[in-house]
Length: 399
Image (tube, helix red, strand yellow):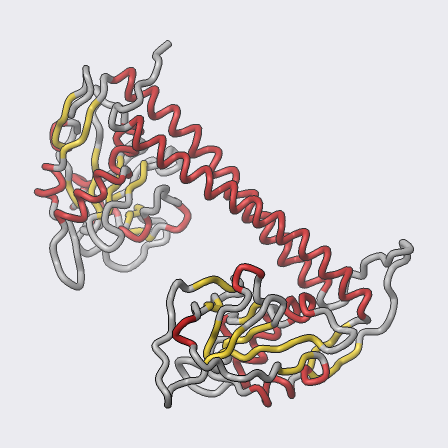
């Protein structure tokens, strides 16, 4: 149902220039040439600094597809449906065959229609119109026919202004999150190598010597009885890139001669031996307490005078990852045996300093988690707002 005062129009009817794609073959990169935009360059925004450049001759040949600030660039293939507005910092550029220019006319708001193109309803329509099995794309002919809701121009501008405010809040939070992640990385490099020493409980800087100790003296494998009826228990998953553990929502289809399964409990250090070099290591959370995993995931506990969270932090460093990568066998999934793992060594401080370092890194993790949750909430709220504003279900008040 079209809202009162709104209309539905095909994209071809809201543009000042025909919707078209660009250069078929851009040729070699020309450092001082004209930038051109590929589908992979379109991710909600366009970064002029990362664009390839073509010669003036090629650009002139395809001048019909040149783009300027305010034009919408739409991805026709690959990341189909992704769009972005050409920024002011890109005074002139061109396109490739995988991108289309949508130059919105003066009777419409380019920002409003950028949000329309990013809406779930339009993206679903675009995907439905895309052809191809292995390499899907939408044709210009089909794109031009895609219908969009058009509010009166003042209302378009107001809606775009509201959604733009949310985008700014999202961008700010993304920057804060990236800064916090970078700060934690710097903290790890300083604290886990002893380059920066913290203060003890008396306010005195730690000064004890760090010792190199084999991992076999720091952690020990937990020996367990295999689960007799594993099909009744949910599997846990060790996420890659040090992202922790999660419930998989899946149950094993165990057979008598298949892999054995074991229960894992909160606080255990678990390692996916085939993916340790990809960050497949974590501590079992309370949420995953009592879930099961196969024997491809080994379980360990910290020995006396060693902090399991500190151990996880050290084993999450780039240096340790490279060590494991060199030691592990195989080409695809590089599996490392428990014996080989325990033969490696770590440089560690005394227990009190381990705990202090853990508390500082834990605080940094909490800040990152809080910002990530805020970012997720903002994105979800913006999505809900788009569904209401861009369909006219919720009308805006004009000043």
